[in-house]
Every structure is written in C-alpha cells, then in structure tokens.
Image 1 (cartoon, rainbow, N blue to C red):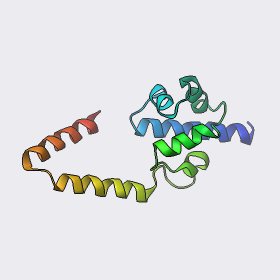
Image 2: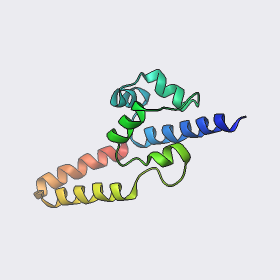
Image 3: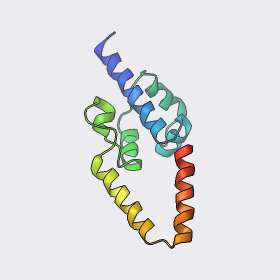
Length: 115
C-alpha cells in the first residue's frame, strides 16, 4: 500500500474517532461544515482528504480540534488550552447557579455522559 493511501486511511481513522468523541455522525458533521455526507464518508474510508474550504469550516466549527493531529497524528485530538478554557467557563457558569439549577445541570450532564 502506498504511503499516500496510508495517509488517507490514517486521516479517516482520526476523523472517525473525532466524530465519535463528539457524538456526531457523518450527516451531522457534513451539515456543520456544509459538505455532502458522502464526502465525509469518503474521507473516513480513506479515499481522499479534505482541502480548502472544508478544512477552514472544520477548524472554525471546532476550534478545540487540533487540525495538525487530524492530518498527521502528531499531538492530541484536542488542543489542551481550548479544553481547559471550556472547563473553566463551565465551572464559572456552574458556580453562579442556585442549588436547584445546579442540581438540574448535574442531571443534564449525567444524561450527556450516558448518551
């Protein structure tokens, strides 16, 4: 197998891992980045790679996704600073809630975790 084909396949595996981690599917990702769902399927299957506009839309829609990792496998899926910022924002928001709303937020988070 050519190194180019392996690059495509490895990209597809990482993209699939990201989609799964985000709780998305091919159609929902396609809707978010404004491409046909069959195109997302071709990326996941390792048939080709996205270029240009889809990459820009992916980076803009998911600013915490490390695009370098997606294409090369170097580093981690999520930019650690972005994830840290999201956690800090969640914690700040939760600290402002009254006990009843905090309990409701906890139940919602537990529901997300199960999904």
